[in-house]
Length: 162
Image (tube, rainbow, N blue to C red; front, side, top):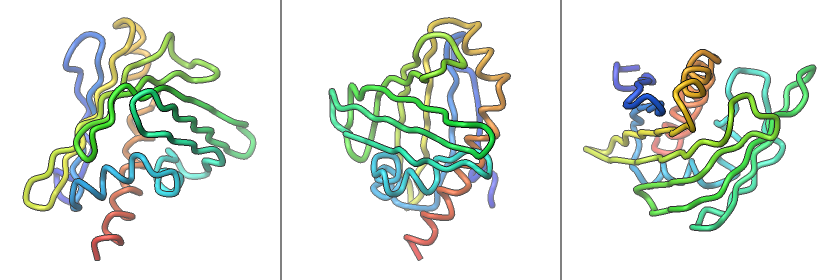
């Protein structure tokens, strides 16, 4: 793995978290992995041991999504939201709110896909209601779960591009 193949987390403002990761795959394939349930269920799992038995995605403005993750002994964790913008293969904007909120309110998630020389950089920015919520999310360990998920996505994309 090269340095650009690792997750970089920044705080562009007092209410935002930005996560940046590059993938050795064309933008079209990376974008599809963010909107196709059969792909999301393979990579968007966080730490080992979790599954995603519910993955519903209506990727269009006004469409909704719903994810439920499950881990033995831990129960279910569900989230969902509404897409406000879907511009294949460039950009997705949606809300995110958890069933049992582990952070206050809902966030607005903007995901940008940029391709250069066959590699795609994904920048996902989460905008929270306030700085305290953002700081709580940063301290939650979310970063390690995203990193593991993105590593899985890189493996799936590598197999598709082989």
